[in-house]
Amino acid sequence: MKKLLALLLTLALLLPAAALAALPDSSGVLSTDGQMLMPELTVKDIPERPADPASLPETDAGRYFDMEYAGWDATEKVNIPVSDGSGPQGKNVIVIVHGAHGWTTAYQKGVQKAADFFGITVEIMDPNWDLATQNQMIDTAINLQPDAIALIPLNAESAVQQFKKINDAGIPAFGTNTLTTSDAMKYMVCWTGPDDWGQMRKLSDVLAKAMNNEGGIAYITHNAGTSPYYARTYGPITQFAQTAPGIKTLDIQTPGFDAVACKQVVADWLTRFGTELKAIFLADDSAQAIGAIDALNEAGRSDVLVVAAGNSKTGQDYVKEGKLLAITYQTAEGDGAAAIFAMAKYFDGQEVPAIGYLAQQIITLENVDSFYPVQW
Image 1: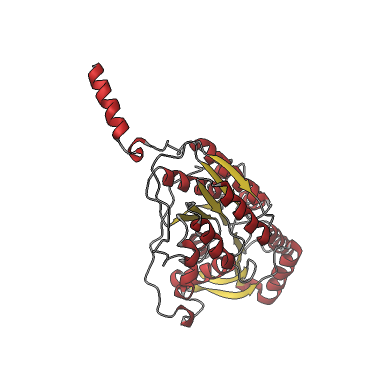
Image 2: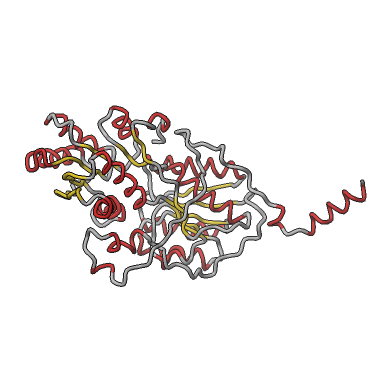
């Protein structure tokens, strides 16, 4: 027996680290709202790119191909360090976020919870929305020579040089939350974050069913020109055009995230369109939802269906009260944890997808109770 044990020990020592390492099962680790913190990242099927997306009409999903499938052509990675497969235990990593916000606090909580689970030491740096400060933090992080760096870039154009700098230093780089261009993605091990377009398409399907696939709809958008602006406006518009062409766009407005301004927009719609207005699609389930619902309540219009990208406590409470038909599940803790989860897989020598999306869920009256308490 002693000879057998000695032989087994010798074989174990000769095996590569990747064969010895094994990630612990994270399925039982939950976020604040009781959801699985680290479900497996999903990968999208990428259709063939249209020859000239810009030539297509605004209602054609192909027009936004390069936005919806950002990074689709980042197939040739540059100088990505090869993992030794020794596992995540004892690794030191740095996560650089974008700025202070309730969402960011929840994101950081997810980062820390995932890091603790895998035995990773993590330092979080916050530039408070200042690009120059974020660039300085990247330099500082590189000088500390961690085992990996994750970054939420503040600026898509600057992201290329930011990730290249990390890559040039021989440090594994991970993109998180905010999509960049393919030029930046080629310097990353992977990117993880929400599939905003996919979420909006799912939300649109829920709304279309409730509208019996017909009627007038109006949109309050995210900030013009941002990726959420396109995803949360043209995601539903192109989805309706394909699956529910009887749903017609009445108007699109961009009043920002001030409840009073949003209330005025909706009040104007009620005057202009009357009963022709059957639904409202919001980019935000907090301030925009407050303004929209106040206007509908004052006008006595309980017949107008409202959906929103979420999920704040305000939005979830509105769903529970029946004032919002549905919202999307936007897990901040899961977003942060996904970056660490991807790092853990990388450290373990596992294959990591170039682009890994968070799991998608839609919150309705039927399931809203299972998403309390909210993350932020």
